[in-house]
Length: 232
Image (cartoon, rainbow, N blue to C red):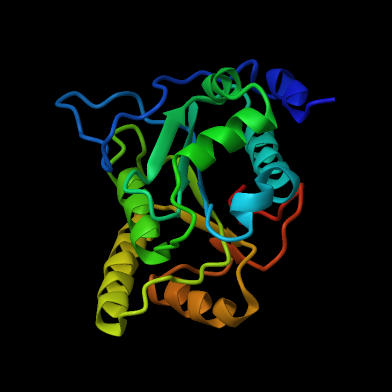
């Protein structure tokens, strides 16, 4: 039985607007801002390396678990889901819409996997650039405010593919600035499948951005019922 069968019941009462994003890496602020969202779930998936081979078996169940947990906590509220990817493709943010729109857009695990793979360049993993672009997009979403419960999830080993150290350092600090602004607006982070050698680095990055315990989760496991930050 497809795991998508569970989504109609979970998200039947959720409302939202929008759909697949246009080819842009930032949301523009309109003159008259829309009603603030109650919650926003952002999932950034690394489609380089192993994830590009077996997304359906390993990462997809976790994506469903995240969406399910998100839905259970936001029944009756206006919310959105944003999907982005962390490979070498120039387009990072791929989808913005309500959970209901996500269900209609991707009717099976295979459909979502095909969409993500078609939008990726799996031989690269510019983690710092992709993370920054995703976070910058959320920071400029006009309906995400300090009152919005915002969670950004990174599904990646978080191993940066850039080998030039000055470039790597420059992009790392740019990402850190974006994460700091995101945290200042109340954003939360959850990092899963982080390579063991990268856990210490990302803990330092998160701490430098000002995140407090309870505002982030970081581990190197994949599970269909993932641990979420305490604000949920």
